[in-house]
Image (tube, rainbow, N blue to C red; front, side):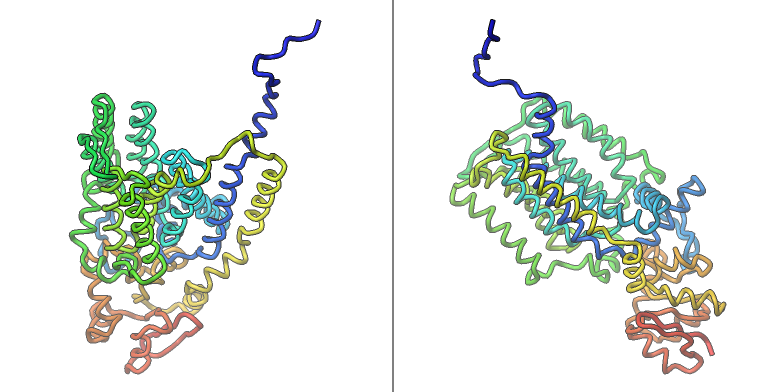
Length: 496
């Protein structure tokens, strides 16, 4: 007897073939393309000046099994107390270095940069329901993320922000149990970066908007069901309580407020905290994205939800006020654009997928990732181009007598490469502002005060400075000081 034919008229595919179709699908091709784009973006961004003191702090925690609560690396702060708000991220950075040296650090950078862009794609896909349009949203995430792609703990924070938005969306649209992942997210977040407070603010915006139900033109608000709101508030309350699971207690929770309210020199003088230049590429892109969202809403081609409007306003204000917040704007704006444009492009259909071309594209992307990952020699060259590598070698051979006054951007590398010379200043602007050193050094470096006064106050024995810095030209003319070393990026002056 012949076998009965299924009512659908189709023979079920083998499990192996179904898995193969998923692995070699068009969305996977898009994810691979995003991974290549992210790697090519960061491959020449290895040497951030703050990387090195993060690395040294991670080494201290790893080897001593203790989290320092006071400064260990500078002679000017007099063991100023500090808030170890990035200690967990610093441990992961050192673990990467311990495993594979500079290549391990580069892998850390690529992992979180690629993770941020791919997570942005997932977020946009959840909001839009269109896997093709989500790719355009992920490109927006990438565009604004390029402002913050550097080997620093903030990369973990951006990834956690995307994860938070995904969890809130899943809790609203699928099952409220998703909300109870949030406490674990916030425990990790507060121990990796001070931006956890931003996550709480966004959760507060969602809570506020959840009470309103109205329609004004294309602006729409849908009140949450009472059980969903209750579950969200319970999860949020547990998250707030979980923030106490940190080494500094309430001080670590209040640290973001101290940064914004009690550190005026940090906000004014550090470039990444400066207001966004609206005439540069990312400033123009920000305006274009805002215009697109508003036009789609005004022309009634797409709705704009009340909570999205509030999030967009918060992200815009942050990015315009401080250019380092551009990645946050991209993360908040991209899913809104993706949802509004969901109907502008036909959605992905698995039935139309072609395995062979997809496999070819995925293979090419994997080859590009392999070839594009920088070699150890390339990484060494990037470090030497930005850090005083040769000057440190000279210090070790010459045995100059300290104390040392160093350039701001050289401090982090000196903490890592020459720990026998306590630094004058480095990128940890919080402890230097609290101790008053940041203001003194800024006036000295920009020649707003008598250069001799600071040198006398701290009994400086030698200065390691950037070659083109204003004060380096002055020291060359000052009696009692002589140039003892010079290379393409650094100079050393010692007392005669």
